[in-house]
Length: 98
Length: 371
Image (cartoon, rainbow over all chains, first blue to last red; front, top):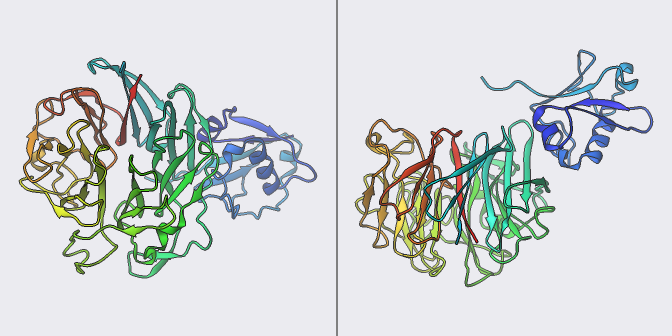
């Protein structure tokens, strides 16, 4: 199971808790974890990535193990600590504004 | 009628205000969808328990929620707004062409007869319809075929912000876009025509015959007389007596004819309300006095309504979807301000009192009659 930590607006929208778990077949990648997340919580579709292009929304960021994965391609394998469940993948609403 | 329910959208959530028919004591619930910008929420005329709400966020995009119990509980529904076919381009600020890009839902208009059918006016301007309670949305693309390449964003974005259904003719719908103008369909949304003849914007749009490009802020009608339309344009208050085919100015003795919302009394089709705002660069009331102006003659002759409203040092704005009326007798009038106040009048505007004073900036106000 992959642990995913969501920002407040999104875990409330999903009627879930701040940290949720998703099941991914095969080697987990950034893209496959987000696919599984949206399949499990369809209301999150379009809030993290564009519905059609699957491009990350500009003010959403992905972090894991202290690394910024936001600019990595979707087929990027996730760090081993995330795969083993030791660390979560963090979906973060970026600081923006003044 | 046992009472009213006022639906308030704000910059940081939605609030629901309820009262009995006396409209003196109010219960306030909220914030619903805390932290989201609520451009609009509105109830179905066919089922008062069915509500639709638009949430948007610069971070997380667009979400739509539906309630089947009058706002006690909500569930997310579809949020996929995909333009039909090649989205094409519209005019950009610098005069070049710019691709159509979906940003948010500004306005939700439930069908007059079917609780599962609802229209959505979006930015970049287009009209969508759902016939399954908001689960899926389809564009009515004929609208953007009306010289869409000449439409341009106003200061608030290129938004479709007003949707009016003709209660006598289910195939006739009016919409308005900033800055494209007013449009009408007579075939249920398949084909559209601009209805902007008579609108004048001397400096912004020098061509007096321009069919599109007008900055219409809001349109209102009385349901008993749907061929008569009242418009608050960027500047100028206008009236049409032929379903938009032609317009004439009715600004009359208003202290300024700039403003955003316009509303019609529930029982007097020639009684209309506007909130004059000083100018397009000074978005506050003239002289620091918050005054609603009422005309009982269908325009031109206006009286200031001030009782209970701040008459000094008031510099709030009232946005285009933030004024409405109820259908009790006497008619109730409601408006919300960018300062977070929601004012109500239970006597057709003669006197006012705040229902609530310190909400986030108010974006929209709608009212429902409760059985």
